[in-house]
Image (tube, rainbow, N blue to C red):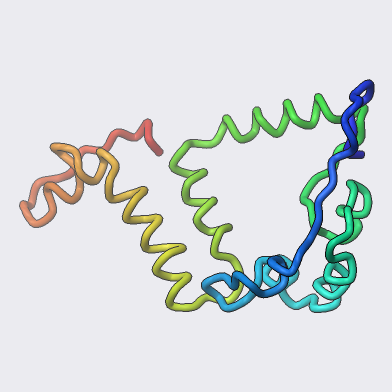
Length: 153
């Protein structure tokens, strides 16, 4: 894990620092690792014990610090399938999902504004279905029915 066959580069690794443990709290008041391990303070402490150490693939998986770490023989197929899956989603759906993931954990006023409202304002309310000539916002209050381009959904 972390190095492709025949590749002379060193294995992929991550390193945690002081920045991962409190310098940059999220809108929910927690660090990103506290949010990732919400309700699992022991997992945060295990990660903190590895601070400033090079953490390679298997150890990163064991600590829960990476989502995926593929074996050499699976790498090409797993990456291909992952890219095909992502490409099958609509861009609007991906934007919405990303906004929800970015502001995980306990909800606060800040996460509501920046995680939900801002995403919707920049994502939904700027699209042709809202602001186009026959969009919902243009026709609001006129009594006329909006016409949507359903290919966007």
